[in-house]
Each structure stands twice: as structure tokens, then as C-alpha cells.
Amino acid sequence: MSAPLCWLDLRGAGDSRQALAEEAVHQRFDAVVAGDPADLAGLPPTVTRVLVVAGARGPEDIGVADLVLTMPGVTVEAGPGVRLGEWHEITDRASLDRACDAVRRDTVTLLSFADPTNIPMEIVLAAATRSPGTIITAAAGVDDALVHLSVLEHGPAGVLLTAPRPGDATRLARLVRATSPKLDLVTLTVTGIRHVGAGERACVDTCSVLEPDEGILVGSWARALMLCVSETHPLPYMPTRPFRVNAGAVMSYTLADATHTRYLSELEAGGTVLAVGADGRTRKVTVGRVKIETRPLLAIDATDPDGQPVNLIVQDDWHVRVLGPGGAVLNTTALTAGDEILGYRPGRERHVGYPIDELCHER
Image (tube, rainbow, N blue to C red):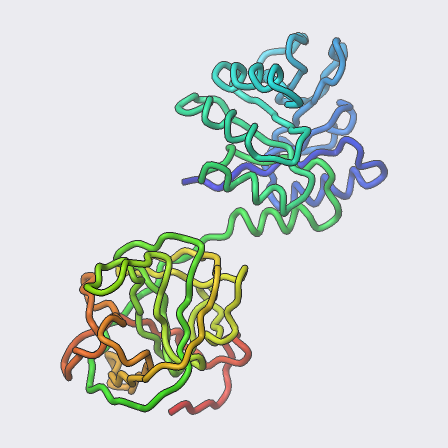
């Protein structure tokens, strides 16, 4: 799936227009929008130059515009190669209906919404299902843009920053184009398990439904982590909780994203943790809650492919599970020497979650 389109609006930017346009071009924005053809004149052809016609008549000369957007019912004269579309401001049911018709018909539709609710956007996106046109929604800031892009899971094709400030284009480009890389998982070999008394363990409840072969990577030492599976698999005495991973002792490392570790005790509602599949695919998910409770603990000892020791301390209970090769679900209390667990070696030591090159022994 391609990254969402990023558009920047120069209308109302005042004396900052040139600087904002230069930032957008530098960040490889897909389009720059203006209400005056003169504001598009200096832009390179690598960016789509969009002219919005707000009145009942368009200008006699659209300049270098590649795309002209008009209000519903307004027509303009455009030369060959210039695309046409409509700009719809949704304020009531009638304007919503017109927008639904437009997204089924037009090649490009720009939408703005008067009220602070996503319901009209959901309706328009649903109306556009399987339509070939491009939908861009106007967002007042980067945070609003990110919300738009998650509506109905996929959001519109792109977003328009309508009130950009210096740095907004850079931040939006970085966030929408960020990818979660696939990790090269390794096979760890269990050498034994030990009962290690009681302590605090953390269950990580995410705001996402995790897949049967998904979990989070957890370990006592930063150099190697084990893949703890989500509670998507049936248990005889309790319902499944597909949003949860019974992860491990509170001091354990996990991955907040593909490069940064966090202690389980540091995770909190609204933060992120990296969900990892048995094939190494990853995605950042939002943490909804972390439950820390005193429970009996079990130490899992293993070795990595180079024979280096690996350790994970989890709740000492049969229903706590890890994943093996091929997505095999393994109950931790039933592990025996020789069993294989999926794991990951971050490769470098850690300081406050960041990879660092320095002497560090963990045991």
C-alpha cells in the first residue's frame, strides 16, 4: 500500500508562503495548493500545483496549475493536460450528499468539514468505495491529519495541511511515510526453566486485536528477546483476550518500535509497543493499559544461535505462552531443554532505550 498523499495549503499563510512552499518541496510533498496563480509560479514540476477557485468564476489565466479545484457547479477554462476537480465544504446534509456524488464521479475531490466529528468523513469514504477518484481531506494540523488517515482504517488518499506552520510539513512527511520494518527473527534453544519466587509481572493490553501468531518481544537482557504470544488462543478456564500479551517481569525489555527498547514498567496508556508476527512482520500498536500484579515467576533460560545465553522471566503459569518456529504456541511451564522459541537479537547494548556502543554486561 502506497503512503498517503501530502498536500500543503498556502492560502492564508501570509508572508510565510515561500518558506512553507520550499519546505513542502524539500519534503517531497505531492501537491501545493494556492488561491492565486502567482503563488504557484515558482514551484517545480515535481510537485502538483493546485489552484483552488473560491468564487463563481475562475481567473482568466490559471498560470502553471496542473490541477484546478472549483466549488460545485463552477466551471473554468483549462488548457490541455490540466486536471479538474471539486472542493466541497461539508456543513450539512445537503452538502454531504453533494460530496458523496462527487467522490463517485470526479477524479479529484477536496473535502473540508465544518464540524468536529468524523462521521461525515466516514460517510463520504464509504460512498467512494471502489470509486477510482482521489479524495483529499483538509486538516488543520498534523495531529488532525493523522486522525483523518485512520478513519475507516484506510482514510482518504491524502490530507491537506490548511494552516501549516514551519516544521509541519517535515513532521507530517516523517510520520506518514514511516514504515515498520520486518525483523530477522532467530531460533533460541531452551536449556531449562526455573521457579524464581514471586515478583511483579506486566500484562500489556493493546488497543488492537492481535493476530494468533503475533505478540511482543520481551527479554531480561537487551541483547536477545523472546516472542511472547498474544492471548488469542483458547484456554480452558477463561475467555481469550486477543488484545493482551502476558509479557513478563516488570524490569524486562521490550521494543517500543523497531529500534528503541523500553522496560515493561515504562509502558503506559497512549504509548506504543511493537507487535511482531512469527514471520518477523511488525506494526506499532497503541498501549491501552499495563496491568502490573504480583505473581509467581518462572525463568526461561535459552541460548541463541551463537551459543550466547538468553533469559526471560514470566508469570509462572501454564497459560503464559511463547511462540516457536512456524508460529507454534508453547506453554511456558511445559518447556523442556531442546525446545525452540522465536527470538530477536537487537544487536547493540542499550542506554535509556537507545542503541549505544559501550561496554555493558547483563547477566
